[in-house]
Image (tube, rainbow, N blue to C red; front, side, top):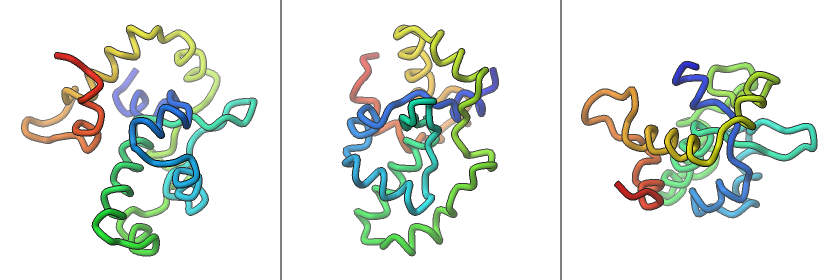
Length: 137
């Protein structure tokens, strides 16, 4: 499985995303309404977010804290198209892989993402500062 597919795999329900981003469910749904993030939906219509979605929500939060309004955010972060490479993937294959992930495996993947798996040296992930507090080295 490539890193891009892994980063776009729908893994996190909205409750986890709320904890990771310190955003409310209403804020997250508002950004979805404005097509800044497009989470995948399960058969039961539950939203599932990917690493890229969480990272994008943290970017939006940072811009809001700097005083940028929603129109400015839309210009900076172009809305996500459902067919784009940044869209969260939820198909039969990724759903099976998501179910197969144990907590240990998910923890390892999260830690790898935080510690910069596949990044150039000195390139810091936007989510690293937010998520690193959940992991011990």
